[in-house]
Length: 287
Image (cartoon, rainbow, N blue to C red; front, side, top):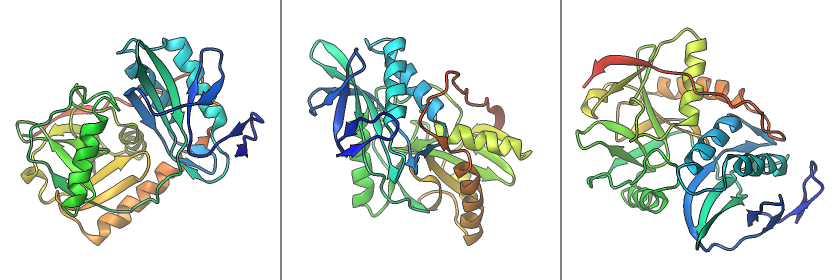
């Protein structure tokens, strides 16, 4: 057990907890169907982009017969206030269908160690995701793809469209560099709105660099540095399976990783205003 410094309430490490309409927490079982999830890294009580994770989770919940915007916002604020001030954590919030209703749940998990690089494995099967833009809707399918990638000696599964265009990883966004231009797949119903990708895009723009979107196949990226992005690991250069890797790519990635880390702020209070991801400029290049 641990007492939360902000609330004075005791919490059980690693436990799933239901959040009820009256604002109370109770121990949760694992029954029910997970419809939506979101997660972020908490490092010594600091988080980057928590308001954006909250916005993405709330928007996804609205697709279902969820608890409504007001209750979801109250839940997310209660989550933010309960996050530990010490250690590295990777909490997960969930919308769960339990019989004839939906409930909100938090799962406080210790954060796995960060890895600095990633090896990609490309699945040969057709993309079977039902709702690619909703994090959690295809949880079991994506977990099976990551397991297959591990079996193949890789770290992450790469998803491509039926036309062969690079889309994203099972748990990551994919971006690449053309010189000093940061590129990535165009947004759409087949792409999860990546929080780390949006933050990196804003940092690149602030540094005076161009951020574009384009459709590209794996052969199009053969000579380019490719990165995966997510909340847990931040930036990881791809060393196998896509693009090309050089030692200088890792050095560049670590510089941008430091800039990302500097965006983290105390997680004790979720801001009232939701930050909107920066619009990316459509690009005519690629295939």
